[in-house]
Amino acid sequence: MDILNSDWLIKMLEKSSQTPRGRLLSLFDILEDWLEAPSIREQIAGYTIAKQNGHLLQDYLTLQASKANAYMPEMLANQLYFMAIAATQEKLHAKNEKSLMHAKNAANALIFAQTKKEFRITKPSAYAIVASFVGTMIVAGGLFIINSDQATRTPHIVPAEPLIQPVSTTSELIASPEQTAALIAQIELMRHGNCHFIEALQLPDNIKGIYINMVVHGQVSTDPREQQIAMELIKKTRCNYTPMLMANSTS
Amino acid sequence: MSLLREKILSTATNLFQTQGINSTGVDNIVAVAGTTKMTLYKYFRTKESLILEVLQKNQQDFQSWLDEKLNSNNKKPSDKIQQLFDFIEEWINAPGFIGVGFIKASAEFPNEENPIHQLSSQQSREFRQFIGKLAADANIRDAEGLALQLSLLFEGAVQAEQMKRGSGAIKYAKKAAKILIDGAIKN
Image (cartoon, rainbow over all chains, first blue to last red):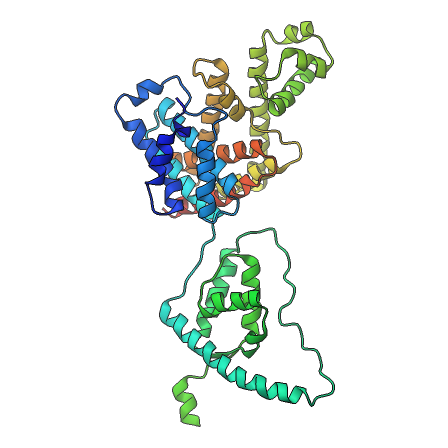
């Protein structure tokens, strides 16, 4: 009985959840329910639940893993497939009633490890930083006009220091929790100040995108390379942390 | 152990893992080992007894290696469970890795009555008990549950790796194992 590669299972998975991650995890719930159905266990005793060459389920899981933004969808699908077989056999033969529940927990951790996790800053904070950024852009627009006027009259222009230093390559696909926490703390700190980074206008689009998403909107990706770029940009951002009331009273 | 017997065992180990157990005939083993069928049957009564011995030796070798790694430098129990997947990753990524005997045998011999299936199931259980002991020593409350979760991750990653060498499956299994272990230690 090749239940794992049956059309029935694929249909059940398809309608089990709205999200690809949910559909991947439902595999373990559906198998659990199926094994609890009357007389099923007697029918499949002595048979394998999957043929060696069946690919229907693995292909389906690969598609869902890809939709869930897994780093390596086919590999994740294979791992989940083998875990489901092992847990089902454990329940059938070793009479371990919790095997599929434990397999689901392990699968959840594996999916987490394979997919990108984003940490978001609250909306009010994001609005404050966006407002600061937009204001900066208006000022920068004016400065750009003044500078371009001056540039035409300046005979020697000293090349500016590259804004972004080359990023060292790393084999790690996910930034360490410490690195992520440090970046989030830095962004949180910036919320308490009046920050300006007019050079952001001159950044290449991909770098500007990282700045807007991560620093302005607070959508911190776990990609270590992107985090490193964001940190470099933050270092170049000028922030005034004098409380607004105090600043006004001294002027 | 005689040198010839050892040669037959190591040849069979390599061929079973690279070609599959069922696909490897006795003729093939003796040809690669440079011996005769008569000699092979002198040391191993049947092909089945050869397979059983290969499985036992593979598991003993792996378990001894792992014990030595875990018991070096007087590690604390919590360090041992935390480092388990580091060592498994080291072993899988080593150039000589050709798979895990009991996982391959279990897939190739699904019939529960078959002695090869029975031995591979027993080895799988023993390995899980070993993880369970590491978890219990680290004062993890549901040591048995964590052991099952980690062994499923291990077996899933090894099978993915056996399908495609260098897949990187163990890297993500290790990350997932860390999440599960950290969660279990907090509870």
